[in-house]
Length: 459
Ligand code: PFF
Image 1 (cartoon, protein in one colour):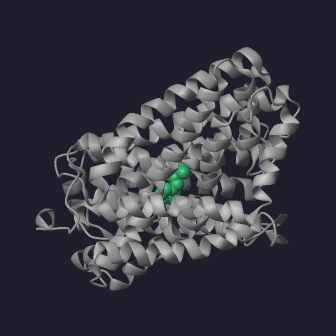
Image 2 (cartoon, rainbow, N blue to C red):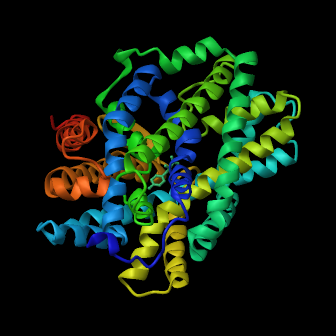
């Protein structure tokens, strides 16, 4: 029976440990760094609305499906897919879905680590009082100088990769479980404080209007795809991260409730970040579409002006690093467990191999902000960037949605009703189960396919 299947990596200590770890994986740079800048680039309200619809109609059902697959398979994503496919009498090729996930995690971490490195660098800037009394121009220069220097970026990227691999090497339970317990509530509090600052000192009404007033004329199929891709990215879906966390989940925990909780917390953090940032953008006449540097060029203005700003800034960037850190370990965990379970490496060896490979790939992102930028076209839009942009589009806009689509097909069409009700702990006639099954069988596959095909101009 599947529930007895042993995994080499043990179990979470409790339901809460899983909720925290999954929230730690979900809440990361995606919420605080990426959500505001892609919202800015894609015109605001309509984009946010599509993102919220995707979280509810696609994200939560897929999260349930991923946790369910993980807990039933109790292995790394590749072997889990292989085992479950066999169990359901389907082709073993389903393991390729796991393989795509492992690769996606590796690609994402390579650039994620570089951006987390910015946050590390900003801890030092904050402590040294660099933002105190600074105006928008000075703050922009601090950021510009950082990304213009490959050496500095490489240094911080290296440090973040070492931090990540050290935790993964020790197993997740001893360090991160505790750190995340303390830091996630802290991050939330600081964000609320910053929203308070934005309300008092920023163009709050303008910021809220930008975030929530939907003007559909600004929405292209490319931005719909970005919004959907971001729903996957921010919830850590479509690549096996939540699947592997699910593989450590005790049997008696409700998958549905847990998924709602994690998705709710993740969405709240993203919206709070938006409400803290856009009012400051508008009151300082900055560009909402400034790109990846947006957060690093707006919040420091607020830090520089508020009383106790040095402390708040330092705490904020420490917490941003922790948010990124708890996500980073989940990005590489599928690859590491696969190297252990399939290739027979020790956990330490697997960490060295996966860590070095990711670090090397990260160098391409380091260079894409300075020495190695170019222009390319995707979904009918011309973009200037580098390896960072290509990896971001490839993972968030293609690999994760495709992974999510296939997970939905597997959970909705390949797995029997009996298997899914068993694992979700629901009756076959329960309305919640029927809605979930309808969403993964029809809505997710159709919506993801239409959006992807429209965005690349095939439909
Ligand atoms: N959810 C993380 C964030 O929003 O920053 C990023 C992420 C982590 C994506 C793990 C995918 C993943 F599997």
